[in-house]
Amino acid sequence: MLRASIDYQGKQGDLRVVTEGSKGADSGVTHSDELVAFAEAALGSDEAVLASSRDALREVAGSEALVDAAGVVGNFQRMVRIADGAGISLDAPVALLSADFREELGLAEFSTASRISEPGALGQAFGGIARAAVATGLRIFGRRARAKR
Amino acid sequence: MTAFSSWSGPDAIRPDLVAQYQRVWAHIASPGTWLTGAERVGVAEETRRARGCDLCSRRKAALSPFSIDGHHDHASVLPEALVDAIHRITTDAARLTERWYQGLLEAGLSAEAYVEGLGVAVQVISIDEFHHALGLPVEPLPEAGPGEPSRRRPSGATQIEDAWVPVIPADKLDPEDEGLYGNMPGGRAAGVVRALSLVPEEVRSWQALSGAQYLSMEAMARMETERALDRAQIELVAGRVSALNECFY
Image (cartoon, rainbow over all chains, first blue to last red; front, side, top):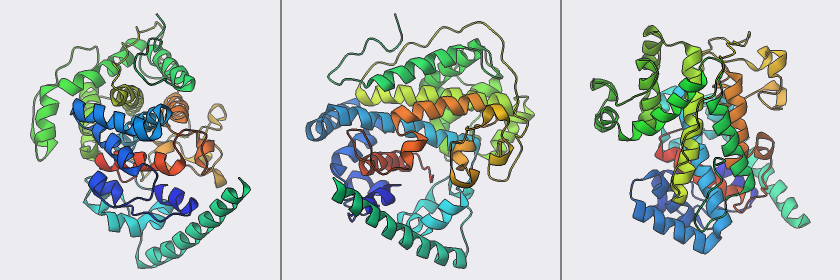
């Protein structure tokens, strides 16, 4: 969804920020550094780092944005455990559309990766075409939405 | 005093978040589908006790969490198998295995009780993590209410290849569970939405909570948000949290 939302905004972003973190690539997302640092600190155990990351995010994006970000942190601390606790596989359409960037990001190294049924060569080729079509569609929709504002 | 009514700190908490947290606390305290109110509050207690559990700590540090034997630090009414499930889900979920899950069933824990315990645990964790992220003290747990579990098992729940636990396929929902998976095209539902469907009440509860903490299922289909964060910012935080948890989803 990150890639889709970046496409929709008509931006270019390097998704390696997801796996490499605040020292990683430029995601193209507004306040990316502060958001990533806050997410990392919230999952860490250093309360001083967490407090300073809160201050930094509040400073650039505001208190409401900080509360929104804390909600998202809480939400995904839940969702990952639902997925892991129920042992669900990655949905086939998602696996098809995400094969290229899962490889790029090295998600196969995750301990949970055994639950992914990787598409074959034909599926990967189809996934690449479908992914490009989806990205184009999102960029067009995003451009139209911005023009209406 | 009403739960979640004494916030302190520089950041105002959105009313819809407060309302959902209060609802979840009441939901946890009530008898569920397979667990009593006392057992559900016991599950909530174990999610917090797991953070300081010596066995969990040693397992987390080990190359394989299954190489370390011992007993969890716990003081609840729950059976040992459910305590183990809740502690591992809380502290080391990415290294759970289907073999471990099958071992819980062999130890006498029902799939239904496991799924309900998982549902309760993850909702408490998500609310506690919100507090931690904002530097707020966690809310005291609710007192368990009286009553018996309903013991309603969805008639269409079945074992499928894509999950360890039984789930309801989208075309096998009972009439009372209609809409459980939202209005996805073709009646499809993502695996993570179906994951806890053996206990539909927990699906409904986490979805409502998700609508406040993240986005409702309807809002997920839109790229614009009505939040202070735009969609890409929300997904960036979601992606980083998921990656740190080694979640491919």
